[in-house]
Length: 160
Length: 336
Image 1 (cartoon, rainbow over the protein chains, first blue to last red):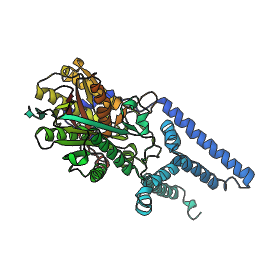
Image 2 (image 1 turned 90 degrees about the vertical axis):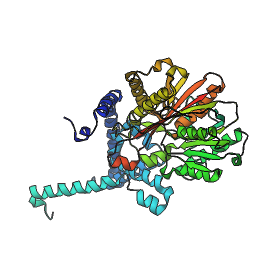
Image 3 (image 1 turned 180 degrees about the vertical axis):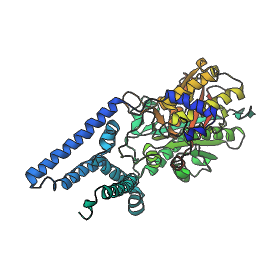
């Protein structure tokens, strides 16, 4: 199938792009999937351990322990970002470090560090959501859509 | 002077009186470390922002080049320079310090040879006794402007390139003992509809081949005239494509050695740079450091440096524009 974008290209361009494509190393690699699985899983395991510690030593219930656990993971991620380590781990781990909450914390912290030098208000304040902003916007939109679907298919949930 | 369609032949042979390079720590760990005048151990150079650090790199290289030539700023008539920042602030702010009458240029990473070609042209035509050509780039400032915050953990694809931190400057004069700038071919903008900003080598390769082809046609020479032909920052992916294109266009590059500055500056085995290096400083520090040193040692007599530039902005990418590219070729020879 010829995409709409491709149709605009001249035959010379299309020929070149086919040639260039042949020389492009594949972005897909099975090893990358394994790394992402491994690191993502390890971060979840770490979260589980922290949660259990809160339950056993902090007197939290399992449900209550969720928030402080997230807080600790975010803190670890921010510290690693500040030390300049997180992006190096991420190059190796890919989605393994991007998907858990640590990835979100890294997106916020890295933007805050980067734009701090452009001023606290206009720099950091204005640009802190530069990377994480779309996640929040479309996360909210998705939550809204899921919420509507929930009401339609399970009316008893309203008010509950 | 004008020869063929888009080339200049410099009959008065402007001489590169001196050149200087200043690079960051990561470049200092690469195989060309010995060829750089100054290798810094950190990226900030005592400044409080990446942009200011980039300017400091340029100021340092420019001042050093002028000093090596045995001149003062006042004896240089014109300064040609540019960089990758919005409104070429690094270059213009360095020009404020140098206080030399200044032409600010933007040709993305091709600015290194664009500035050298113009600086040579002005000296050759008698417009100046001495000129300065200087360009710089900074890995972190480029990441910040074109990609993500430097500490953001995004995985780079194998086609991505690592922007060189550093600056290169050359002083040209009418009288000198060489190496001499003998000709230049100014490239046209070539756009093959490539859209991936993480694969700029593939976008720029056709522009490089177009300019090289024009250079041979205009000057009526063959690749064998040169000991070495280097492109600016095509890196691994673009380099292979360029080799394919040379074959397709029947340009006998096997007569000479063809290489790419983006593949020379880092060690692929120990430095994690994906496809290779890029940036205004890439071709500048390799040419003004490594290649001129090799010419001085007599290992090379004639070289052609073809700096390549991708003329995109983060905005043009977001608006789904393709990447227009350009390449400028400058030939440097040891003897008149």
